[in-house]
Each structure stands twice: as C-alpha cells, then as structure tokens.
Amino acid sequence: MARTVTRTRRTRPSADQTRERILAAALDLFSDRGFDGASTREIAQRAEVTQPLLNYHFSSKDDLWRAAVDGLFAALTRAMTDRTAGLRGVDELTAARLLVREFIAFSAEMPQLHRIITQECKVDGPRMDWLVERHVRPMYDGITALFSALTEQGHLPAIPPAHLYYILTGAAPTMFVLGPECRRLSGLDPTSDEVVDAHADAVCMFLFGH
Image (tube, rainbow, N blue to C red):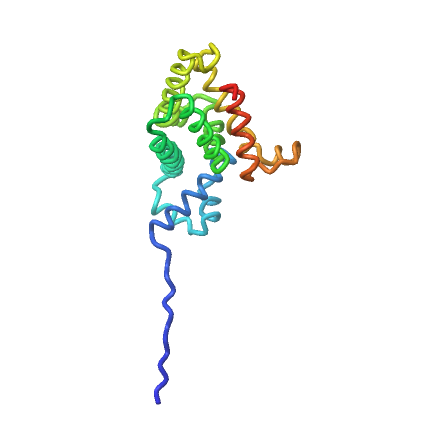
C-alpha cells in the first residue's frame, strides 16, 4: 500500500506582519538612540529582516522614522479616544482624572512616546517641526484647553495651562522613561500594575488634590 505523506506548509509572514516588525524595531531603536544614532542596518537586524526587505517597505530612514512615530501617536489617540468614549455623562473633573490615569497607563506601556519627544524636541530641526505640528501640538492644545476649563471652575490652582502641561508630561512618564534608574534608586518595578496605579494616584493627587 502506498504510504501517504502529508507535508506541512511553512507559513511565511505576511507583508503587513513584516512591516509591523520593522516598525516595532525602529521605534525601540529611534527612542533609545535618536534618529542619528539608529541605523537601518541595526533596525533590520532587530526585526530579523534583510536590509533589502526593509528598503522595500520604507524608501528612506526618514520615511521609516515618520511611519514609526505616526504609529505610536495613533496608538495613543486610540487609547485616549476609547477612554473618552466611556466617560459620557461623567463630570468634567472626574473625566479629567480618569484621562490622566489613562495617559499614565499608556506612558508606562509605551515609554517610547516620551523618549521620542525628548530625543527630537531638544533642538530645532525639520523632524522637530514635523513632530510638534503633526502630533505634539494637538495633544498640547487638548490638554491645555482642559486645564484652562478646570482652572476656571476652581478645580486646579491658578497656574498657567502651559506650565500645567509640562508638569503633567514631566511627572506622568518619567518613572517609566527612566525605568532602569527607577529600579536602582527605589527598588520599584515601574512595569508592574501596582506601581503604575500608585504613580497615577500620586500624579492625580498632586494635580487635583485628591
């Protein structure tokens, strides 16, 4: 009797999966080393793809950087939009506290967000201009408008909203951006749910008084 041989076809990653791997690797390296310090060769190695395959998906290093940053801010927008959608009918102060907590949770999960901003916004240049106008300014405008309204209602101290913005965006992510330092100094694990929740409590208490 003839023996039937069943061959298992080895599935190959789709183009979308390959692109996502490249973007994830790029985001990590760009956030750690900055645009100039991260090479496409290293990104290809981190993503486990060939350099020609990376070049097929992204025409230049700048194209790759912009795509990675776009994806990062798109993830932030989804997280905040989803949270906002669940707050219909909630008073403005409670909604603000919950949105701050969501922002902190995202910062803990994706510290690359603030590392990228810090890397690129320290000096003037075309990438800084693009990053600010495309992504950071909309975030700034939304946060300062919320803080202005809460200040007028007496929920926040009479501090200019620009200063409150930098207080929030400094206090919220720093523990996660400086994770290795945090572990050594405090013994805390900034990736643990308990520490993230405690940090959100602290920031909300600092901003809102409770």
